[in-house]
Image (cartoon, rainbow, N blue to C red; front, side):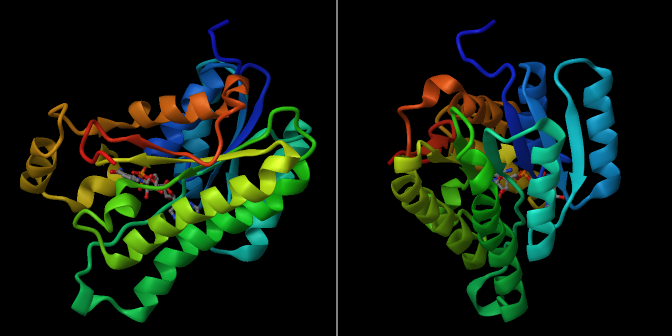
Amino acid sequence: MGFLTLEGRVAMVTGAAQGIGFHTARMMCRNGMKTALVDMNGEKLEKMAAGLNASGGAEAFPLVCDVSDHASIGRAVEAAAERFGGLDVLVNGAGILSAAKIPEIQLEEWEKILKVNLTGSFFMIQKALPYLTKSKHPRIINIASVAGRMGGVGNSMSYAASKGGMIAITRGCARHLGPLGITVNAVCPGPTRTPIMDAYTAEQMKILEGQNVLGRIGESDDVAAGICYLASEEAGYVTGIALDINGGFWMG
Ligand SMILES: NC(=O)c1ccc[n+]([C@@H]2O[C@H](COP(=O)([O-])OP(=O)(O)OC[C@H]3O[C@@H](n4cnc5c(N)ncnc54)[C@H](O)[C@@H]3O)[C@@H](O)[C@H]2O)c1
């Protein structure tokens, strides 16, 4: 057993078919956490969960859900809690990106980004509460972004607004849910090598690397490790923080 207690805990990770969400779910399963993997990309989700289950570790349970579909959120939380007999950890990782410039942003895009990244995360928290309050060491972890810190990094204002909002609801929920023993934290990744970054050209990636003190783009496991710490029993005195995992790309 490592110095962090993860074994036997139950997690639900959204955006878990690929990228940071998948790597987080994988790290959790490998460390003995039963994990519900939630994503709208059903085909990929089933494949990734089957791969995890074939490689040992705790159970990975795939749940198809579009976090922007209000009814679907409640059903997914119930299904996860039912499968594993409760819920200790919620990770809000599902997110979409846009790079539209200010004059080009359409209302439809603005609303879609907020609906997935921010509204979906908030209602996941709301629906998970009845289960989290029954856990001995309940944790909520929101994947925000350096974009929420800086007002975007070549991203659309809709993305920056959603991630700034994510940091705000993290702090607000931490304040309101602390008395129930629930910790609520955010992680703020800098540019991280995942499929979401396919929108960036090789040249743009080089520029991002050059702006990073450690001289490299982040990997999903860099972020997953921070999330697993916040998910552990030992992180019980940490709440309301936004943990920057960005290789020095931005320093408060
Ligand atoms: N990669 C980065 O550089 C970076 C930096 C900062 C923050 N983030 C954030 O980290 C999180 C994960 O990003 P990633 O880079 O792994 O992205 P990704 O595109 O690789 O993965 C995102 C996953 O979310 C799923 N998803 C999207 N919309 C959904 C919806 N409505 N319902 C359910 N699932 C949905 C996708 O199917 C996908 O599997 C996002 O919230 C993103 O904003 C990423």
